[in-house]
Image 1: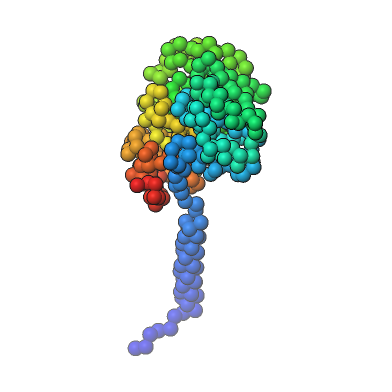
Image 2 (image 1 turned 90 degrees about the vertical axis):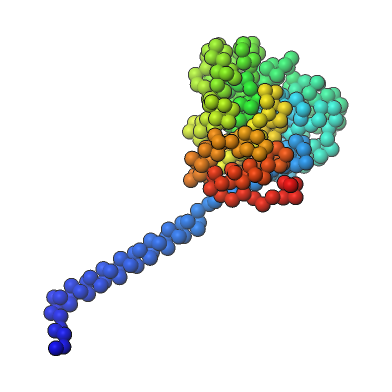
Length: 363
């Protein structure tokens, strides 16, 4: 028998059901298209290596990446062999809006002089005494630039004198550090927010730093590093209200990175990476120390590698935990002799992106 025609009511119900199915299908397709478009439009983290043939050239490369031609009034210059004097210079560089460039102690590198000229600076601030930057360097600079030397009797005194550049306005935070690694890790925040970094002996509160604190009576006093690096007795002597610390220097750097986002207003979408195994003296930390002003402009924290060939579990875990928000740029400071291409690949994998191709200098 031929099929019985649908009654009018049943025909209406069937038509309505078909219409609903069609609309649902269209809705799913539209939603899928929106998700696909959003995924395609979502910014992706990119990694870039800033490197030169040596620490002086790396500092120049970092400067060129962040500062335009004829854009500055002043430049901060520190010794490339006595990097402790560069520890507290990041905040001053933040005030004058400049990079921290490095020089050999006994002669000004021609490439460094060319970079100062490119930046259009009229003033050069020398961070450190004549043992760190000899008069021969200032003699080359003085015919062309106004030269200001900031030098104390030791690193603690020099840091206190550098902090004096910042005492013309209220500062929300003053950092107090003993180790060069911890001071390097906090440098991007110091540069971005113009918050002073004071240095102290880890076992006894340095009188120069205590005196300098008087210029910042309303600032929150934040100690950088665990009690093994800066004792609790010294922290109490400074009246510290907070301590940024981890189980080691790498964990302390990640604690500082969290502070940068949660308390200093960094967006958390980028990061810097530099060698963190410089020992107690910081002799291998030149790239980390000069990264501060560049990362300060980018509002990105500094993370540290465990060695030339090992990113380190702590740093890898931090990148993995924050991978979803890393959508801007990761800057790797130093050539493959400091941070190998393997470590860059490890960082990229942890952050959920791809490593840049090895260049001729990456080996």
